[in-house]
Amino acid sequence: MLDKKGAAKALRGLFHRTMAVVLDDLYLTLNTRSRTSVFRRLKEIGYRTSYTHAGSYYTLVDIPKFDERGLWFYQDVGFSKSGTLKATLKSLVESGPAGFTHEELEGLLHIRVYNTLLDLVRENAVKREEWNGTYLYVSLSQEVAADQQKRRQDLQTGIVVPLPATTVIEILVEALLAGRVCVTSGLVAARLAARGFSVSVEQVAEVMVQYGVAEQKKTAQGPKRSRV
Image (cartoon, rainbow, N blue to C red; front, side, top):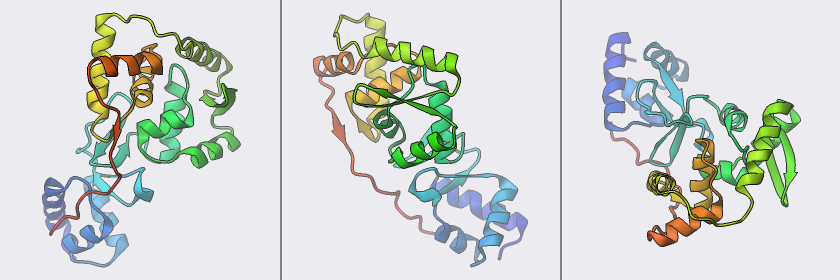
């Protein structure tokens, strides 16, 4: 097992080469099989745990460049300012101007979320309302939830109307950013809704077709293992 100074240097070297690693990489880098020792050394320099992949990936606290939703991805491994998947979902639902369906949240987080959302509802951490054949997850605050439902009603009119050039630009920017993992009109609309833009899925789809942005998906797989 490396001493404190040696461990810090070795860990920073590892994360410089691969920004998200699994426990076996840490064992090898620190020359130990003690889980307790590994996390003691990680805690000394600060670390974060992924909310994807059952929390099996780690990064240093100063590596992620979080977006406005507090999310950061290294390949398909997701990290959140809120920490766990449950805490992340609660934060997103509370702050989303139009609430979220579970499909939209899966699009943002690139992970299955239905069961975790159900746990949050049962724990009275968020509310869900029936909405057009699905569930809309909203804030516990009655006032905030009412505002979210009103915004959702505006988004779900299904009427495709001409958009200002500035909004078209925002759609294309979000499509490019989302395309790092998966790009669909629903995902882009959800990302815009999280930023407060009242744009329907139909409007996004029309802009993407008009500008030749293809809807596509990437097969999920973890980052390549680091060689240490």
